[in-house]
Image 1 (cartoon, rainbow, N blue to C red):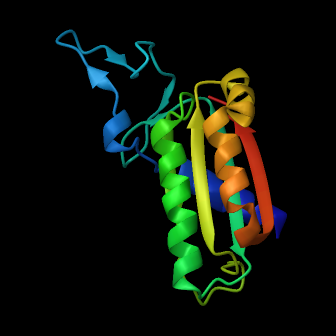
Image 2: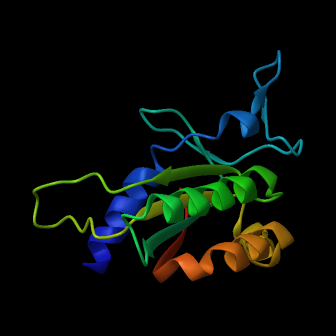
Amino acid sequence: MKYIFLSLSLLILFSCKSPEEKQPVTSDTGTVTLRNGESPETVESDNGPCYGSFAHNVYIWLKQPDNEEDREAFLASLYKFLDASEYVVSSHVGAPALSDRDVVDDSFTFSIVLTFKNKEEQDLYQVEPVHVQFVEESSHLWNKVVVYDSENLR
């Protein structure tokens, strides 16, 4: 089952796009730069590039997954954090895509795939005040979190 999550996470990673407010900028010379002015490492896919060489895949199980107030509070806190993060390069926030296939685990409430320029910036994100605040605000809403981190092989 662990390998299924990893495979699905990699599939999501290679189809992610940067949020509009964090879209990279292409200059007249065709050079891509990130919002912090640096050049990204990219992976091309059919859906466009995915920026960053480090992927942080998070699966969240809310205590009350059918409680709309809990879901809204979680997402509001998450989006506030993602919009303010200095280190997140791109993000994908999703819910299970229900499937009849036996190999699909759709028991989680939310999936979050974040990319970072590199492992060092992901390490900084872990102690970033907006990330710490998100965990403090939202941790009472979940009963399980599973994380898979990976570095790009290309």
